[in-house]
Image (cartoon, rainbow, N blue to C red; front, side):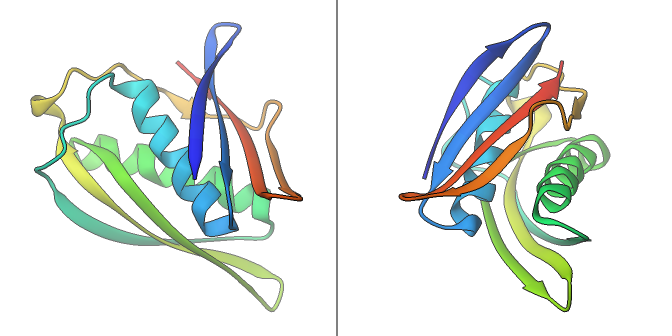
Length: 137
C-alpha cells in the first residue's frame, strides 16, 4: 500500500495503490493525513473506530474520507495509521474504519477543507487497486 501527493490547480490530490480495496482506502486516508501534516508522530493519540455506508464504491470512498475530515474537526485530531475493511452486501457498500487520532495541538497541520469528486478514480488494476482523489484546500 502506498500513496503520493500530487499537485492540482489550487488543490491537492492523493494517488494511492494497494493490493486490496481495503488497502487502497487506508492508503488514500494516510495520504490525506500527509497532505495536512509534514511530520506525523509515531506515537500518541488514541485509536477510534467508525462505520460508513454508501450506494457505490466511489461514494463510499468519498464518504469515508469525509468522515475522517469530520472526525478531525469534531475531535480536534489528525487521523493517521488508517485501516479500512470494505464490503458489499445487497447493493450497499460499507467500510469499517479505524484511525489513530493525534491531537492537533501536537502537530503543525494545514487545513484541508473537503474531499471532492473532481477527477476521482477508484479502479481495479492487474496489480490490485488504484485511487486518485482531489481535496479542496
